[in-house]
Length: 88
Image (cartoon, rainbow, N blue to C red; front, side, top):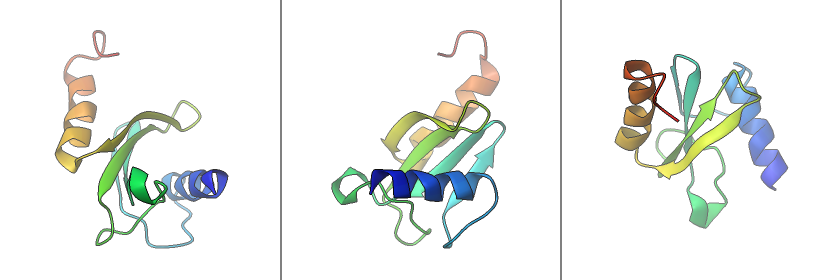
């Protein structure tokens, strides 16, 4: 189940989707809406998204943070634009 979820995210970030997923591209990052940890962190559309993951699109689709609110995920990405050398 986990690999299926990851492949859906991989397809969504690359622009090929099997379902209507919620995602926002922010520079080299993608904020992807998910069903949250309680429901297996499956990619979700806008109306079903309860948590958001930040994915580094240029580094083999690495998860940088998971199960955030949208505001927290957005801030995570924005801070890396403001302070790229000190952000970890």
